[in-house]
Image (cartoon, rainbow, N blue to C red; front, top):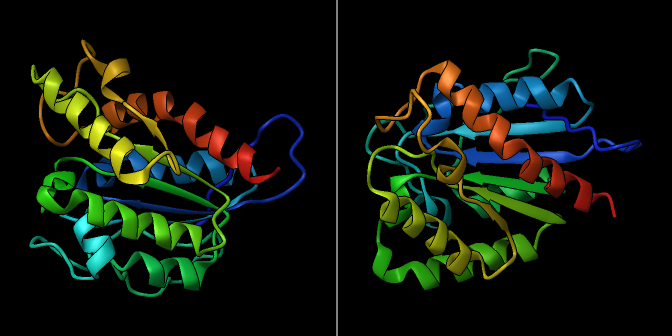
Length: 207
């Protein structure tokens, strides 16, 4: 897929890799694609059910559909089948920007989150990526501490390599976020809050 972001008078097209779980299948990835491709950047977006740091590092699929994804290019070509191995994706796509979205799957194998984080950081730093943003979930229910925990884990895993956007801070009290997955309209609200962080990552990659 091809994503685009316009920041001021940017004169380049960034290569953006987006990886996410089933929460972004509900409209977030599609909205991100439509918004950013219209602004001139190339984006490859993969939303895979049950994926997260464990699958991206170790390269195996989740229990509800390893090959489930939403991906296409502006020209309508089919993209290669999803691989959950981050190093493989980075090597084949060679993005300048990495956007990560994860929900509860960040808790998988939480006891090894430092090791998973260091492996993700090593893969990012060894790649063509110049900037990274990590998007945590919207406010799903009354468990504020849970959303705070996800943001804190993401911060700790990436050691400052990725800028973390804690979505729940902007979606708390908004309608449509009472369950784990969201309607397309709720996903649009989520995306609008995340776009400044995503555009900031694209802008940093241009420097």
